[in-house]
Amino acid sequence: MSNRWVRLYHLGTDETSTRRCRELQAALTMAETQCLDAATCELLWRASGLRTVPAAEVFEGSESLAQFDGSIELGPILEILANKTSVTPLTVVDPIDVVSSSGSYRYGRWSESFVLDSQNPDLGWSSQSATTEHKPWLVFDCLRQWNLAAIDLTPRDYNKNPDFTNCFPESFAIDVKIDDEWETVLEADKASTTLCNQLPRQWTFSTEARFVRFRVTQMNKRSNGRYVCQLAGIRLWGRPGDVAGTVGLSRGRWDDTDSQSAPTAIRKAGLFWSDSDTVVTSWNIDANVSLPPRALLSGNAKFFVLEGRIEVRMGDNAPIELKSGEWFGQWPGTPVTITATATAILFEVRSQADSAEAWCPVT
Figure 1 (cartoon, rainbow, N blue to C red):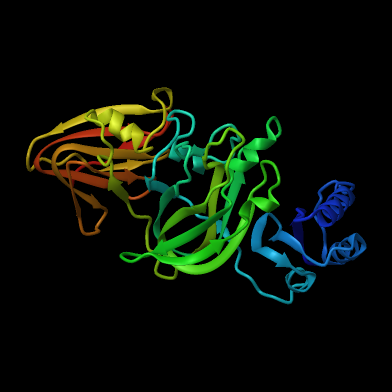
Figure 2: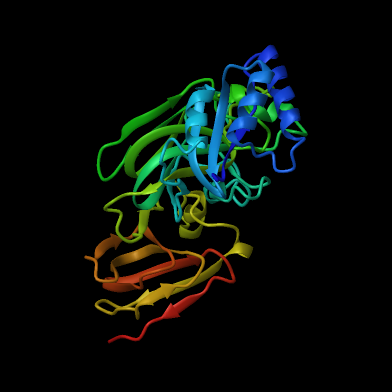
């Protein structure tokens, strides 16, 4: 017997469809799990008078099999529910890192890193706030190639202030690349018309990529006359690529701000959290000296090159060279060795006080 079920995201685009969506949602809440098999789904859907819904997700057990967005009709969903379609489960892309952005409104609460912590609705990312419309963006590194299938955007909590719905972008685009050139794979218009408070809104696409850029193309104007994009969370979904290999090192620049202070510039780049959430270490390494290989057992770490040059080697892979103004991120897994090719000063930030590391013996 199939254990596939569907979750519908009941959101309307006009008064009639909104009422019908709410009636359907009320019918679903009568079930303890709110999880529907194919027969129940068909009965409730047809009884609601709705021909389509804006979004739906099909599961097998606890694994997500498929996600739909747009004007979804019942047929494709029923095919998957009835086991007529063989589908490899989708997984949330993890680990993933924010490697670049257009900036943030308030660091310590609305830093870029918090957009990946969508379990906490009180934290998220906010673009800069301005009286004129602008086009903020974020760049994510998936650390290896993925066959990407969908993106979730979670709006900030707007129960206390409905005007916060205007912090969700009116339209946005998703660009991807493996190495060099960006390619646009999704352009979403009227994105803010089908919001449900603190629930992810999903859009689907299909592409193979490592880097993903979320780019706002049109903003909504708040009642105070300002333009700002605020999101409680972003998640990418997909399947690891056939040539995904091991998880790599994320990398980028931290000195693109106008700050003269390295720690301030690093914070303005949205690359680490508040002081209470981090462990900070300073490394002074003489030329041609290597730190012993180190693997992370939990958490993650970022190394910022303040002066000099280093080579970073992960396992048996070819080394990458970084110079002043650049950084790399390390995740649990393969040990990493750092060698100074010129006298170097590094600033290391670990993500949490209870993260664990293991120094490996040099052989």
